[in-house]
Length: 450
Image 1: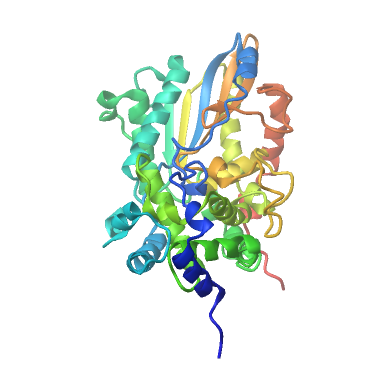
Image 2: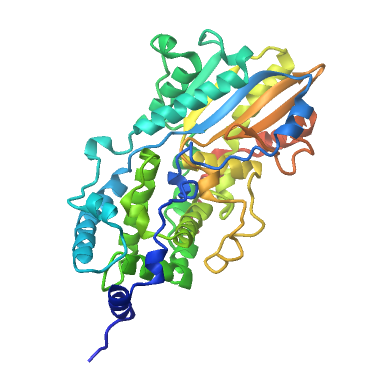
């Protein structure tokens, strides 16, 4: 006869004597550490370069700005929504039952919220921008208007501003609310946004690249290998056992159930920042770190430095920046003076990788979680909802310089120049090389072995 499992014994001890795990049920959620579901207002922003930047930019005037913005906080995708609806109501019901039987650690307030719980969204909401996303994009539009009032605190003119977004509703909605923040509610009714198109090699190049789709996105054997291996590591297994015990289960929850609880926690935290989701009480601070790393292992190889093809496919986006800035440098006239692009987390990840920004000291792997705790590349920081990257062309007397901003804060471009405000002549060789070697048709062609 098989003896009782570790978790059964653990839960009985928890029930009868209490446990340090119950003391670890935090009233606080690390709202800045929720991977790609981190809300923009909650995301960490590095303002440490401002003083040096202000010294360098003295005497310079911004002439043209190119922005890439991820859509704002949204509802789940169709696949995620189906999973959450399938998994969570029954889990919530069992958590309440466990609590009634004297098992688990959740406080009464959380149990009350989980009683008769059902996901607060339906099929019509899938992939749509949530109200918090409206506020995020409106705020970002206001931010850039106030940053460069001579460029953006003006009457809207379609010849001065170029807007582009993908065919997904959430990017079009993001563009609308950004423009509303920049030009005002009175003006937005008169602004005609363009029709999105596909394929879009500037904003959604990856989906138009058959080679990337086959070798990266649909390559479970290679792309998701580290993530799958991490599930069997002690760090992730400890999360499974700790969460299961905290919720009063006498058996370990599945990875699918743990992911669903984590995702609902992340979504509800992004939507309603002033109230705590009861699902978040399932995790300790350490658990959140492990779950963030679990997410990082996916995106690092699917969209960033873990796979070289990711950065290579973003070359046309860099060409788009170059063509606009080069035209202004040659002619002395910035037309358009604002180029606003709205896309997705993959676009942000891959463009940043093309530029060499936030490159970690070593690859993220299933077996180096402890070593990488202070890594520079974290999805929570690199691509929260409404993440944005801006390059601004300045005229500085008789020369031109380029400043780079992430989340509205100045940052250096590693290896491209030695200052925060790069001389145009320093960047031009990199831009030229990118233009000369960028051939998406050749790069994305699938070469089958004969």
